[in-house]
Length: 314
Ligand code: NAD
Ligand code: AKB
Image (cartoon, rainbow, N blue to C red):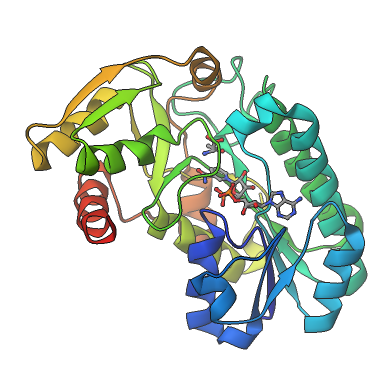
């Protein structure tokens, strides 16, 4: 039986992961937390604490109060916001992670925290990007992600903290809007297709990025946390992907369901620069071999489900 503290639990991943883990382990065993509190499913269906991850005392007190044995650390500043506010991104992503790892070390907790495709940079091989390769990212978000991967490795090797993580691609979901990333266009396009039948893409035609539907992302977190640690040779920051597409391909897929949907382009230079520095497609063989990673959704299946779910929501 696990007792888990989740940071950033009201975000895009946290809002879905918290509910799934409460179903699996019981509501009282899954403690949501966030920098502030607002009325949502997460705050109404189980324990919830205010935890600013830059404040070590708040993390420590929440972990002690609930006697947790795992921390799923999701609080972060994502790529687009991070380029606008690099100091904030460094503070939340690096000092936050350091505080989490210290609390885990003192209390004997495991830590799951996601890295990202942003941990790669322009000098990384772009196609079929290997698990172990050059990582020289040029965004502050990417810098914190690659440093975070190394810090998690360090805490495992030096102190035996059970750290685990994946490099997520852009995540697509209908429950909670994404929080300031470069891949957010691949969520917004569905909302606009249903609401206005028009979308202006800030990412240029031909820009491939890895993507994944949220149910697969949730499975990745749970399956890696449940995996036998003795069998993991990589542990932190496994490449995982489910699909790779460029804006015109997702547009055409949506158009199959909404024939009069139209899209044009107004490329955002800042986002495009970030997107151009990331891989086109990851090689996730290590995750498949070491803990059975096997995504269920491709672009067609995801689009059908997204449109069905969003229609009801909107
Ligand atoms: P999100 O932006 O939706 O949620 C992050 C949450 O952290 C927000 O609710 C925000 O309020 C909170 N937060 C910000 N500063 C905080 C602080 N100081 N203390 C506590 N909470 C704070 O992000 P997400 O998409 O859910 O991402 C979760 C993790 O997954 C992050 O590490 C992110 O880098 C990683 N990731 C996400 C994606 C994606 O496409 N969503 C892709 C790759 C990696
Ligand atoms: C972002 O675009 O910043 C995130 C990510 C891929 O890490 N979605």
